[in-house]
Image (cartoon, rainbow, N blue to C red; front, side):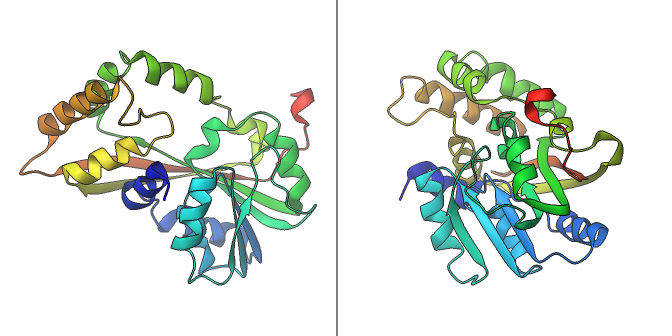
Length: 247
């Protein structure tokens, strides 16, 4: 099993169920959902019990392998090889496109691809979360920024697109949910190591990466547990008619 994919499945902070139900309540009956950049299928598995069919589209072989194992009992989910910019899905095949935190790795071409695969009148929902404990975030990320390799990989892989490139900006709805998750050191550091840009154990920066995270954990934990406070935001709307080339 791919190490990072296994850690991602075991320890990544989960998306809450409430925004999924609210998205579906907003747009009405949905037959087919595509989770783009699905990872191990965190969003796909929530939607699977609420729609007829779900594609979990993911470029990473390791993530797809873990997703297939994790979703094996969900007969209406198909793990699919593809990227945001080239999903391989049929034209006009999807009622709702959902995207998780992988959105910050997408390139502008994803807008044209999403418009191709979504049915006329279809929808797109972008899920993301960020830490709401500012003291924790400042303490941790100011130290991690000193790791040159980690910073370089982040600059290379994070394209930081605006949802305006995907959605009609005047017709979007934003949903917000405060979430909390208690983690042991094992779960906390497992989640930290699951990041695509995080150093592997044989990386020269790994020991310092672990030390920085250990220091943050001990600084903010109580009785061996840290409360991870984060806000989940969903931007819901219909795909823009503008092509990526003209935006």
